[in-house]
Image (cartoon, rainbow, N blue to C red; front, side):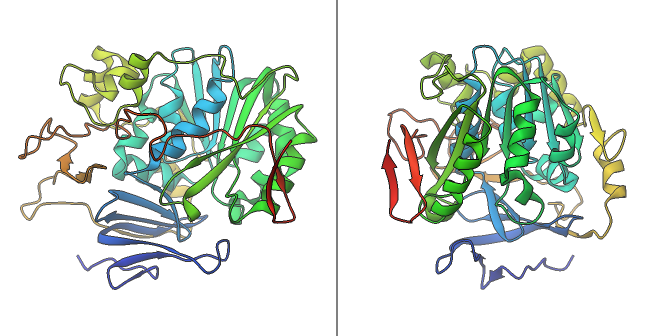
Length: 397
């Protein structure tokens, strides 16, 4: 098979260049391009980097890397989930890589979790190349809808406790998800006391956009706050979120629920220090169901939308697709264990408990353990902050 190439990769380096962050660019060293295709909606690139594991790129913009994705997924999810007293029905708009879904189903209160993404290719490819993120798709309470999130919401009234919008930047298919009509649909789809979070861009680069976004949210919701987290591979190392609630008396800056330290270590620790700790599959599905999941692999559950059935049927309906892929086969045709880079830069495989150096591997867990508060990547909430659209920065209320 010939080597896969891509316009964003030059001399072995991926370059993230965009008009949304003029004059700067993130670069990552590429070990191998794993897959490239042009789906019906966007350009999809997946490559193995030298230090950040597998990287998903949509329309030339980094969506996630195995090394730091947890900083985004945890923040956008748990801000909303812990601002609701008992979230039972949860909707995720976008988020086809499965990272948000993985975090949602860690909450035992969740009885139904629906993910709606317009591009089946992101879901399909994440299941293949990002198993540590896409594991949530296999949870028995999860269903997937392939279609436009805007249209999906039009038929839903008073249905969800929490809605999380994990969108790409406001260009192309995601542009409508940053406008007032979308937030009105979110408001209508929420039950009383419902909470939303939505991706809200970067303070260093997009103050005007954030100001407009917050103003639109305040026209619809009585409670609106801006929060942010740090994540190295996003532009300027920061990304924000709008947190909105239908209950005018709710303080979304004060969590209504929380995990114990032991629960947090079990659910959110990426590197195991004790082999007696359960795997992420056991935590999400229970020990017995985890064994069944490991036997059956990544079969599709409850897929609706553009097709009735599975993602392969949806793929056949998507036109204009040009696919290049490396299937990671050994010379004799057998499956090759895909290596992943842990944040400490030691290497492990998804299939073995320890590598040849004696290090414990990820075992499909999402992120490195964080022992001390305030370490890089810890989520941060901005208290009572308004964004000044003049470009002079944020002012305290």
